[in-house]
Length: 296
Length: 296
Image (cartoon, rainbow over all chains, first blue to last red; front, side, top):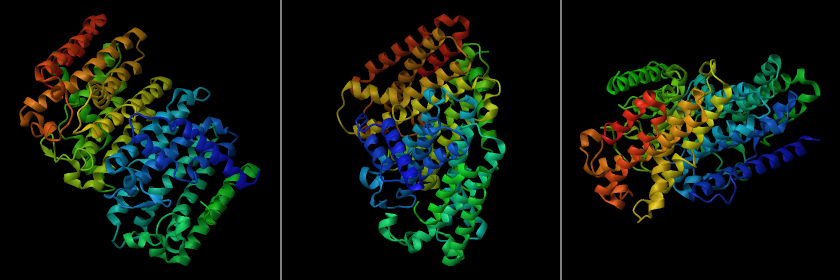
């Protein structure tokens, strides 16, 4: 199966599973479910849940076993988008070409929909049916890993520093802190828990950690680059919105050409760290190529 | 030990443990930790974590074993207060006599502090050291129970219906939905997980569930009553704020005198359900008495 088919199949699997977790006919209380589904099915490419599954399969695990965690991470990712777009934070009106959640449902429902998605993720990860076949200890370890990655020492910490840095001249370590924390930690945890839940060996986890760190940062650098030179229809948001917001980005600190070199080097590193897996590492390598080709 | 001493000792234990989880000298990223500690140490009476511990001890469990969950529930409770106070939701300026979190730190940090507390709660509950002595399966079951109680089918659902009902004339089932979901479910889950983590028997859990349901609703009814006739310094907020906000409350639907009768009956039921525990049930019975005496 080639990468395009694989990604298509995984996206369908994830979309269908998310749809089962939150069916369209869940009606009470009204609006909150509509608001949740609105953002959850807004056309995301499902990079993070696909990484959970691909990582599991790389170490010989099963996609069905890690599917609850894959969906949970997508819910967490969606909550961060909803809250980041709020007027008090990035104040964005458009996301993936559609009005942002608070523009469509109001701020109160948007805040609560984010809260609900975050909470639901932990509900799903700890669901009894999710661990019938696996070790409860590995599940707890994975929940802990994700909570840490998206908490104040990860995603939220990155967002705090990003907000407070906006409009200021930044040193490189702070820029790196923002990017690795705001985006990188969640991507890294997606790669790691796929393998942890599948009972991987230590050296496998080590290699995948190296892979996850590199693509996590590469993904954010590419996102910065895309904001400068991308086309609005690909991004679903206005080009140059980082500049308008006076966000600190890789291109604003290193320039466009150097930023591209940095991204290429990170992607190269990620591909390198897949060597030990031989053919089983192909999917994750292909995902790296997709990231540098701006297809994620 | 009498109840007053017990509650004092438990409050100190919980405060000290929370302080260890989030030390005052945690400095990076700045502001978010200050904001978290500001609300977490704003003088809460720690009812929910005390219920976790008291319930554990009622079935013969140890306070140390359930302490991470007790602290986690207090973090979740604190997050709900921070988000509920936001301008887009209840738009409250005062909480426990102090400016609300967003008044002190701004809306962006308040939203992120709430998100951080919710996430941290799950991080703590799944912490490896928290389950060295206990069954991972019971821990997962407890995490799941709490996530469900505070999610869209619990606390958040109640808050959504409450917001949308504000200013409207309500039927009694909707009023009950709001109260049992917005406040009741979290209190019930505090009582239940204390016992579940301690490996209680089915009939014990059944009795404690009955206890938790009754005090959960009683607590909210008493809160409504206090809003009508309490003194500002006890409440730390302005008397009559529910009426001003046109919130639907028990007194507004049943009148003050009937609401008091309802609260008394609920408390009576909760005390009754403790009978099977004999002397071991005294602490929870005393907590019921505290609730009706408006000391919680």
